[in-house]
Length: 139
Image (cartoon, rainbow, N blue to C red; front, side):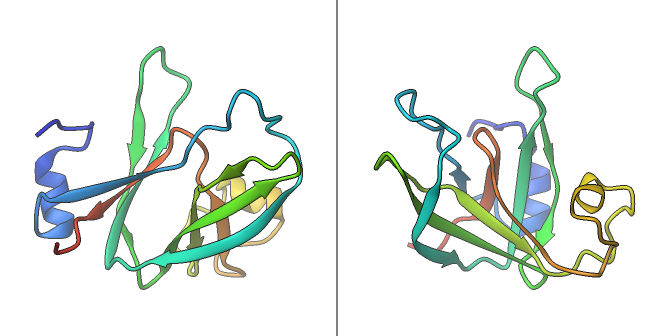
């Protein structure tokens, strides 16, 4: 199995198994203007006990990801369908962090949204190139 940048030992220690599924937010098509109004058409929660979000670090000349472990009891993962004003649709991953009390007070989120750790939940779309590693569901 290809390592995908996340060592099998880490995946197994988080999930108890090396069987995984990877959820990736799609790129906006080249025919779509990325800045336009989008309407949420539908959403679906992805039930998982644990997840490993991986954030693409664009400051390197090759693909480097910062991955971390998250408990689903404090976070929820969704896929949502968005329709742009021009009719194009996207289905990005959407994460809600319900407990930010242990986050670094200097995290960019708090500077942008002007609140402190633990004051509020934080929900966001995963941008293109970010991914979420999940335990593979029994088939």
